[in-house]
Length: 395
Image (cartoon, rainbow, N blue to C red; front, side, top):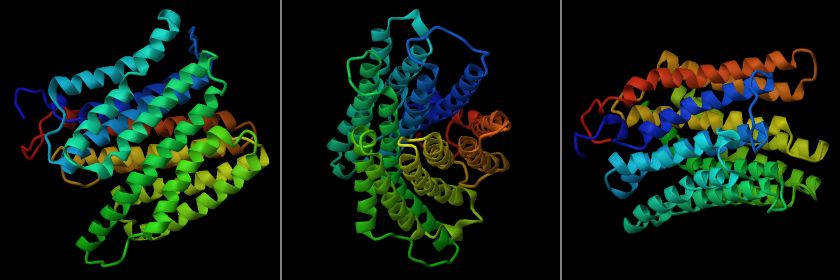
C-alpha cells in the first residue's frame, strides 16, 4: 500500500466506522429536534420514517460496510480497499445520506436513485473479491447486502404508492435482516473471541453451541424476515408464537457461550450483552404481536437500540483498535460508551412501556445516553483514524 494514500483512506473501517458513529449522533439529534418541534422542514417522507430508515440504512449499513471491508483482507489474503476506490464507495454512502435530508429540494426519484446506489455496489465489490479468492463460505454476506438493497428499493416504491406494502413493514423486515447478520457474524466472533480470551487466562472451557442449534437460529431469523413481510399483519398470534420459540432458541445458543465468565472484560461482556438483546427483543416482539397485533415500539427498540447498536458499537471498537495497531484494551471512554448504549436501550424500552408524566424525560435520557455512547467513540477514535497504524502495517 502506497504511503502517499492519506491514513483515513487506507482501510474501510476508518471512514465508515467514524462516519457511522458520527451519523448515529446526528440522526438522533435531528429526530429529537423534530419530535420537540424545534426542527421543521419540507420532506417527501415522514420524519419518523426517515429516522428509522437512516438508523438502518445510514448508521447500520455504514457499520456493515466497515466490517466487511476490514474483514475481507484477512479472509482472502488480499490488500484492503483503499485510496480512490474506497473514497468513491464512501461517496456513494455519503451522497445517499445527504439526499435523504435534502427534503423537497431534489426530485423524489433522484433522491431514491442516489440512495439506492451504495448497497448493490458494496455487494458486487465484495462478492467479486470473495469469489476470486475462492472464499465461497462468506458469499452469503454480499447476498444479504443485496436483500437489504431490494428492501431499500421496496421502501421507496412503497413511498411512491407503487408497492402495496407499508414503508414501516419494510423497515421492520430490514431490522430482521440486520438481526440475521448479527446471528450469522455474531455466532462466529462472540464464541471465538470469548474462547481465545478465556484460554489466555488459563480457563479451558467449551464455548461452542451445537451446530444444529446455530443453524436453527439462522434459519429461524431468516424466517422472521419473511414473517415480518407476509405473516405479521394477517396472523399476528401465529407470528407471536414463532417469535417466542425463536427467542428461546437464541437464548439457548447464547448460554453455550458462557458470557458470565467475561465480566472483567468490557470488550467481551458487551458482545454477550448485545446478543442477549436479541432474545429479549424477540420476547417483547412476541408479546406485542399477541397483545396489540403489531411490532410495537418496545420490541423494536430492544432489537435496534439494544441488539443492533450495542453489537455495532463493540465491533467498531474492537476492529478500530485491532486494525489500527492499538492494544485490544478498553479505556474509560470506551467502557463508558458501552455502558451508556446499554442504558440508552433500557431507558428507550422502558419509555415504550411506561405511560405517565415522565415519558418524555425518559426519552430524553435515552437520547442523551445514546449521544454519550457514540460521542465518546468519536472522541476516542477521531485521532486514531487520521493516523497510520501504530505498528506500521497496511490498513
